[in-house]
Image (cartoon, rainbow, N blue to C red; front, side, top):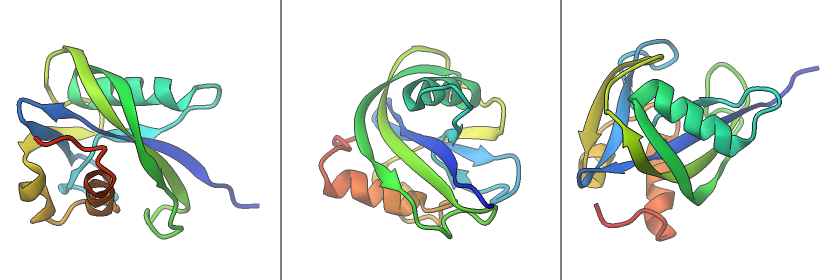
Length: 137
């Protein structure tokens, strides 16, 4: 029996831009992505978001608003991954790449949408803007 993998992604406004990571590993090695990762067994999605954002960006963040749930079966080439995406507010830490991130990159929404992003992260950004969850950055 195949299972669905639950993940989280975070849109972090920072210094008037949005935080992206350059992926260190496949899939999408070298491409820009929103920071996030897999929810561990026994962990809430909010705690997973806090953990993943700290591991990948060095920032301590708090979930602020739900952007949406993204569940297209082909959004990740490794299998059926469902992501819950939050707008996250930085409350501490220092911006630096870590864990699965080769580097951290700050881009405006417009700059990000002109690039090819990993997974369905362009669609996530568009949904955040369409729904008004993403503030003007």
